Length: 151
Image (cartoon, rainbow, N blue to C red; front, side, top):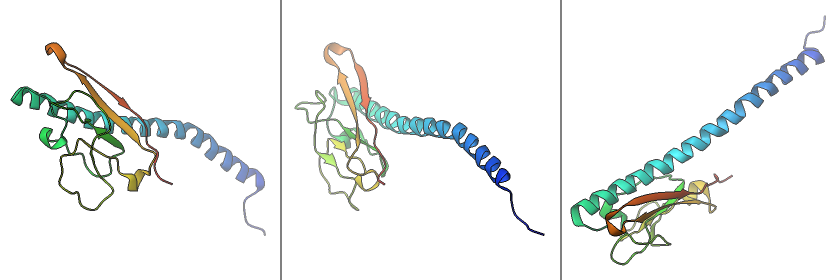
């Protein structure tokens, strides 16, 4: 007596697995995108809150992350840059970013936090917080680009 599976049984199992994968993969991709957006939103909200607190205390915004108390956890997917601005938080640009690929961080007056290149490689997204606070009215918006994990 021979034991084993017939070709038809194996084909049915493969077809069922294929159908389940076709249903599950798009949901998983949507979940990943939501988690990436949540990371950026949470950190940008922390920057916004720090800037508003700084303005309430000193009547000016800051382009230094230490002054607003911003310090995301290691392994961040995005670079956050307040930009070098004379006299406060006027313009966003490429400032002096705190490196995240070193075991220790040298003290300095950083304008932002770089993304973790050890984890995500050189093709990183950037999350930029821009503000227009002229005339007493404040508006804040952000732009977030995606990062791909290193393979």
